[in-house]
Length: 241
Image (cartoon, rainbow, N blue to C red):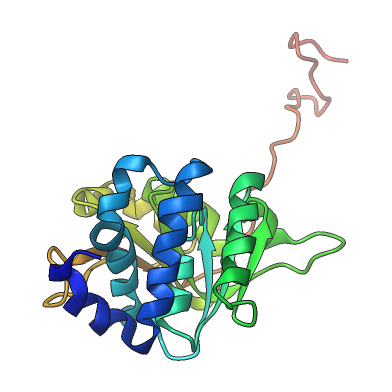
């Protein structure tokens, strides 16, 4: 860890700083070997990744449940589980090599009681299957996954009514809100809000967009075949059957 970041790390991780350091070591070794973290990112693991993710913990209520969509190497889900032992966290990731790393990291860090790994897409997690119940949580996080409209489509169904999507974003966050607010509303979300997290602790602060799930919106209905004026279905060539 760069010495100039030690104070911020102690503030954000407290007595679990050693655990955060162990996770950083995993990212810098196995994470790089498995292609989850680029080699050029290793000098910036603390400021660009761990501290940035840990800063949003200030926006999460005590004892909340969290689902991290597109968790990748565990950012921000594993970081939040390290910084906040009161949280229960589910890491949702569709790719096998990433879920293998996540499972091993959870075991290595001793987080099996508070963290589980779900291999699959967000849509699969939300709908469930014969073998698995649908997942839901108070807070649904995502970092560097997609634009806000697609994030809302994937993440809002995973939030309990009144729960929140919390998306870690960069400098274009305000533009995304302006561009996608109407799409978010159609998906049952409230007005997106912009927050700066970790102000006075990290520089620059982490930027997060939050959306409350205000309404439960069902899946879009599939359009049936067109009918002629006489009420009969029309073939693909446009002729009455």
